Image (tube, rainbow, N blue to C red):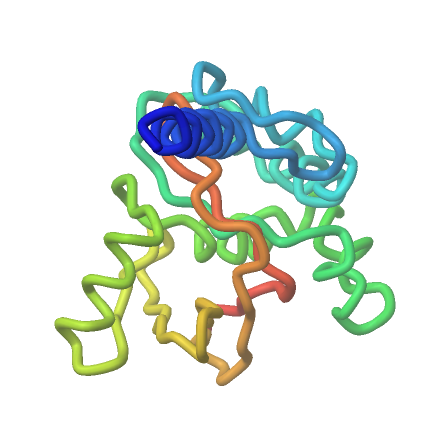
Length: 183
């Protein structure tokens, strides 16, 4: 009986160790995300975030997101950008539209390191909804739909967090399925 209990305990410890390791370096866009790297150094390796990386470069935000932070980034995937009307991304990437691009990108960033537990706590304290202030100065609203973390932007659009708690040296990334739009 003791051997069975010890074996079960050993399996639980192994499972927890594996789970912790998996959470430590989650896969995003086919690449491991390392908590020892900054937001940019991780994002450039994700094949699902090439549009976001190009936009960050065009907006001149690389050095900012390589900075000390901490930042919480709601990172839209390439598919999220593809949901925008045809030609929107190409238009935003033009030098003459840098201000608008910067406004949209900084609307996806919240100061501080807000992991899903902190956001869930804020949602609970807010009676089912949390208001987040973005670096751009706008508001995002977060709530839960079952086990899914949802966000609403100032234009009424919604986005779902598809991968939460991707820890970085200078913050945390939450992958989202729709581009959030400020007023």
